[in-house]
Image: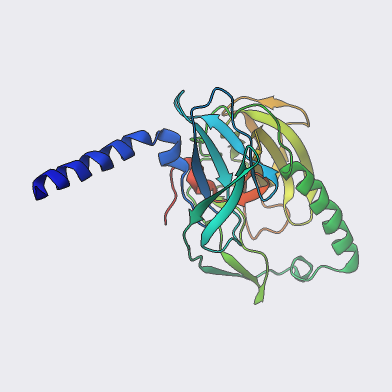
Length: 274
């Protein structure tokens, strides 16, 4: 009897594991700053899903069931999170995750405590960038297992609590790659260039829309090799590594945003570490 129960449980677990497709196994990291993949059934039409009153990425997994791919804010507490599926309430669970601290010393004190003119500039630039992050285009992303945008090792991870000259500032909202100045930066997936600029904190920056609220941002570039409206193939060069803006040396800072929420880019390159 016991052997039969154990066998039945093993078969159920195996069936459950097989039910999860590649995208779910790759992306489902339901933690603050992570991604939740939520099964939606196999209806003929794509369900409409909203989280925190924003549309989310929905697609068919391996030609079968629909799934929602939801970006979770760093500020989200562990426990139940609410969303809407075709206007009906639904919940999913997120687990806790600890992020370590990073202490950085900057010689330019204005990059820690900007003057009034700097603050006015920063406010204008933030509004411009937030509009780009909020974009939701109907096209489906070409791929969700992203390429590395630059050849170089990972350096500062996502989510670090950052202290500049001893003063705490916003957590690290992206992933850094150590690379020499001038190293080509490539699109990790196909997309459209929706914003370029030279910003106070980010330096020379490119935003690429991959589709349905999935946005990449690349900053501290030494050069921008694309223009607004360009449609990039996967692997297309969009700029070169630099140290512009608030940077202590050459590197690429890469943000990934889902449903206007900055999430851990390491999830999309298969490098996530709990």
